[in-house]
Length: 203
Image (cartoon, rainbow, N blue to C red):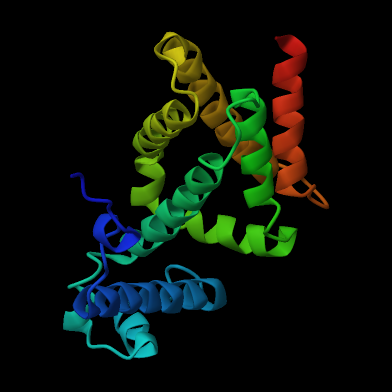
């Protein structure tokens, strides 16, 4: 007789230790970003971040290796949220349209003033700027993996790979275009949607 698995049998339960570690990590990251936005990346020291988060400098290094890691932690969390939303999309939707809509929704959450401040922080770290190419390649692979979870037919893999390539390309171009604007900036979500519309018109 087969055993019926309950949700408790199939979903791992987060222990108290793991939960506290996750919450501490998030608290440090939140403190770091508040300070980056208020004082600038260069004007924020690890000691100040640790004090703001209520931990010691030594404890900081148990969670993050550097200030750059705080920025990457936020980026990874944003991308993970985007992928989680993409997994909820119906496979009846065209993949490129689904990616566009999810990306635009996520970018639209940030007002232009906040996006400007975030962009300034992101460009303040020379080491992060140097590894942008690698980071985008990692996200391209992660996006492709997510697409394959929704559109599971093996024969669509090549097309899904191309969707991932052009979608990440559109995101990169959007960031560059939005940053180079003079005067009053358009919302980044509008620039991103325009990039996808331009792609569609050429296709």
